[in-house]
Length: 341
Image 1 (cartoon, rainbow, N blue to C red):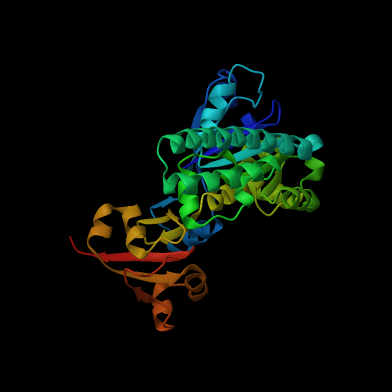
Image 2: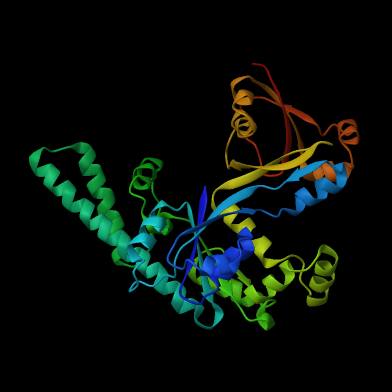
């Protein structure tokens, strides 16, 4: 799944993308009209703690693919490319500067609403023509749904704020409406505002969207330090973790994903999984053979494992479980699989 990063000119999205993916800022700036692609690890403190517990030969965090779009300038040459990429995105990450954040976010959402309204009107026109040629109950249902969407959009209400049945949601996904996509807001603030939780609360509540504040300049400084200096610097600044890590966790959750863990002396690893997935599907994330030959999943909870201090102690406490194919995996589950192929 892909998260698309975009923002108005000079909002800091290029620096943010560089921090997320490790791609040099100069490389990004050399091709301002091209879509950039990179991979980012989701820094999860639970993985770090499991690494300390197992001291494995290898460790792997969950990963997300990020795309960076050209500046969101509707008068510029990249306009068509931008909307095409937004349409294909699984999630949007809008970067804005603190001094004009609310107006900038409102303008961006308004553009998405306009695009969706045009799509709904176009579809209603097509349905009307089809109904004249041959009446269809399915078309009539779709017409009613499109009229609902059109009414909401005319009231400048994003479709993600609407309530739809499962059948309607499935149909709407085929049209890739932009305001149906999850959005994470990133506010690029001055260094002296990084501890101001009121900014995040105010903007998040105003737009009913997840929001994180960060200073791109400060995050760049933190990322350039070695581990020891980083810890000291963050402690001095009163920061518990880099804001960039909080942002990746927000985008990960926004994609509808959870993490489960596999552990051992060879490797500690976080695996991304669709929220609501059953144990065999979790196995398939590791290898398709596990799902095909699924027998049982051995499961314990991350918090229980950390509290017990070892798997042996956990079993003594009776907190190590066997789960069947109907078990719905939860965020933070530590799993191993029994399978036969």
